[in-house]
Image (cartoon, rainbow, N blue to C red; front, top):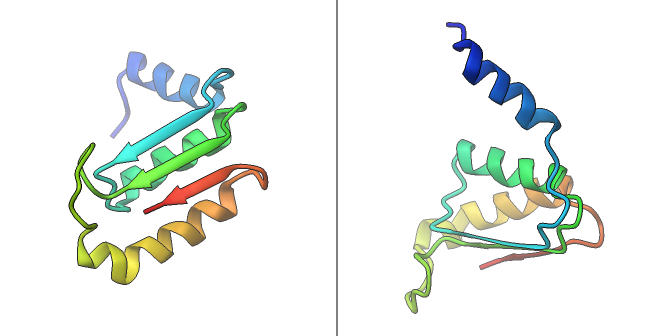
Length: 95
């Protein structure tokens, strides 16, 4: 299936677009699914000034503990995958 011309142009632009001023980003309700990993990787590659990425599987401002599935497996997998893509000086905080 081919994307409509407008969507195709947007997809091409997103490959070359860079974020020059984004220094910190927090991703909440993160489960580590493919879409989320692609988005996080996109930010790591294209946010040239990024200093801090925080990933939290909980809803915003939630005092609850992260889900057990996250703690038992997805957290470590996410750390390994994103650390490979991150700049060495980026602070990566994964709860």
